[in-house]
Every structure is written in C-alpha cells, then in structure tokens.
Amino acid sequence: MASTHTGRRTVMVTGAAGTLGGAVAAAFAAEGANLVLLDRREAQPPAGLGAASCLIAPVDLLDAGQVADAADRARDRFGAIDVLCNIAGGFRMGEAVHETRDATWDFLLDLNARSIVHTARAVVPGMVARGEGRIVNVAAHAALRGTAGMGAYCASKSAVMRLTESMAAELRERGINVNCVMPTIIDTPENRRDMPDADPARWVAPADLAEVIRFLASPAARAVHGAALPVTGLS
Image 1: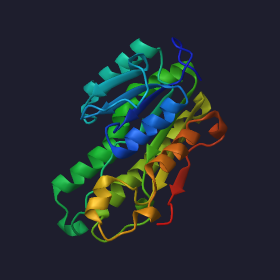
Image 2: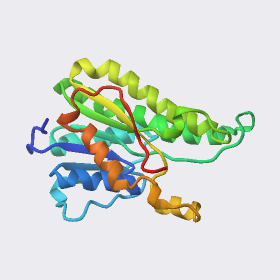
Image 3: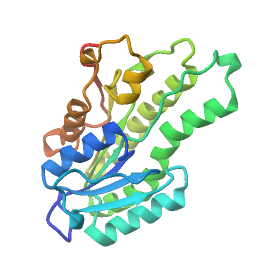
C-alpha cells in the first residue's frame, strides 16, 4: 500500500497540532511514512523528519474547499493518500439536553462529525480509484451511553461511530478498511490542567493510543472493518 511517487505510505493526519495528532504523526514517521499534517494551527513535523517527507497544510476542516485543496496538494506531492487519520475533535461540557444551545450543538457536531465527512469527501475517491486505503477515526468511550451534561458530546462521538460503520460497509469491498478507536481520558496538558486532582497515570497515554491507531492502519488489520476499539488505560 505504497504511494506511487515515493514507495512510502502517505498518511494524512487531522488535528496534527494537538497532543494526540502529534503522537500519531510521530508514530507513522517512525515507520518511514510521508506525512500530510492538517490543523487550523500550523503543525510541527516530528523530530528528524525531513521537509521532503512532510506537507504541512493549515486548514479549517469545516471548510470543505480547504480540505479538498489540501488533499490535492498531497496527491500532487506524494502521488496518493494511503492512510487517513481523523484525529481532530473536541470536548465541551454542555447543558442539559433541553437547555442545549445551538452554539454548543453546532460546535461539537461540526468538529467531531462534519470534519470527517469533509475529509472523506476529499480522500476516499482517490482510495477507491486505487482499490486500497485505511481510515481511522477517533470516537470516544463516552459515546457508548448518554451522560448528564454531555448530551451533545455523546451524540457527536456516537455519530463518529455510526459514520465509521457506514463507511466500512460502503468501502470494504473496495479494499478500504475503516475503523475507529474509543479512548477514555487522554493524558494531555489540557486535561491535566482541567482535572488537577486526578491521576494521569490512569489515563490513556497519547503514544499508546497512537500505536493502536497505527495498528488499525497496518496490513495486520486488513480483516478488521467497522470496529470501534476501546482504549481505556486504567480509567
């Protein structure tokens, strides 16, 4: 599953400027992949990765045109996009469902679900044309059931799971695997700041979650379609 220009896999990572996105980029860089790093902020390439192997594309994932342009640039540069890792997403405690503001609903559904639709629209046709590809989305363990004050968030991550299952059903016969991970709390600087009394050693380390994502994008997972894999650490 190598790109036509370089003989190396090309991996697109959204949310690449974040903690998990950076860990995912580093994991694929370690295997020698070309990287296409998407984020609203300018992502930094993993240490030791040459400029020729990395395309940094500051984009708004809610702007379908910007996402399509970034995918075109990636294909021009590397020949193909072999792996799409939809890491971008967000969390926000909300109100009770009957008090949910449109702004809360739109923020979470856009960031967690609409962004996946936009990247799929930009990347999947190329994978279909080549007859191969890997897509990994990030859902959340919290999406398994609703929680008070988290209705919009749980709904948005549940949407990620349903999109994953639908894409897998649509694409599995075309040589494309689509799966998602369901982490609990990820050990990020933001979560440490917001939960100072918690024990981050019980959370999911970004590097550990990145390795699970890399596995789902590997030939070893070629028989896995539409899975939602819990990654819980000790939390």
